[in-house]
Length: 342
Image (cartoon, rainbow, N blue to C red; front, side, top):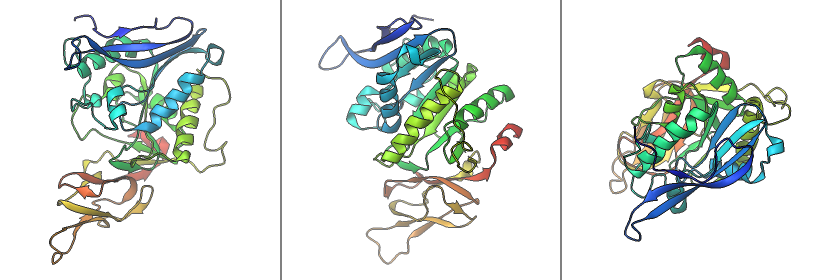
C-alpha cells in the first residue's frame, strides 16, 4: 500500500501539548499546489489510554465542532492521563460553506476505508484509517441532524457482534447522559467512519446532537458536558464520572431503530406538515406527517403513517420534501441492559 499523501505537522503521541494541521493536497483553478489545512491538537501526559475526538465529519453539523474546539483550546497536559487527539473540523471547506457535503459533492462519512491514491476525501479517510485509528482506544465522532433533521439529542451506536466491544461501546455512549440512546443501522450506502473504527475493535461513541439549522444553548451544554464525561469514563480526564442517577435524572431510554421500516419515507413530493416531535411516543398506524400539493388544492394531503409503535428519534426539518426522503425516524423503547442481550 502506498504511503499517505497527507502531511501532519505534529508528532502524534509526543508528550505535552501540540497544535498544528493535517495538510490535504489540493489542485484546483486557483493553484496547482494548494493544500486544505485541517486543524489537529494532541495533548498527552503519562501512561494511559488514547482517544480521538472528531467534529465536523459533515460540514453543517456544528454542535460537535464547537464542543471539540472548546476542548482543544482549553485542554492542558496536566489535565490528561494518556493522550487525547482532537480534529474539531474534519470537513473544513464544507463547514465554511455551511453544507453537509464537501464542495465536490462527496460525503466524507461514506469515504472509508479510503485510499492513499484516491480522491481527496479517500486520501483523508485512508489517513484516518491507517494512521489515526490504530493509535487510539476510543473514537468519539460527533454528529447532529444538520440542516436536514432535528434529533432529540442522543448518543448512539451500531449493535456490533462482539459482546465485549458492544458492552464497552454501550457503557461509553451512556456516559453522555442524554435522555435517549439511539441504536441505528446504515440505510444510505456504506463506507462509514464508525464502521471502519468498529472493525478495528475500537470503542466507538457517536452522537446526533439536535440539528435543524441552529444550535441552542442547551444543546451546546449537552455536547460539552457529555464529551467531558465520556473522556472521564474512559480514564482520560480527572474527576468523578457523572451518571443519570447522580444527576437526579431518570434512566436513559434506548430507541431501537434497527428495523429499516423505522426510517419512514415521504410517500409523495410536496410541502411537508410535520405532526410529531422528537422524543414523543407514537402508535402504529399513527399519522406522523402530511404532504401538501401546492397547486392542487382540490386534493387532500398525502398522509405519512408510522408502521410501528415507538419513540420518535428524529424528524425532517426541511419542509420541501421529495418522494423517498426520510421524514420521521422512530424506534422501539427498551432498557440499556436489553442491548447486551440482542
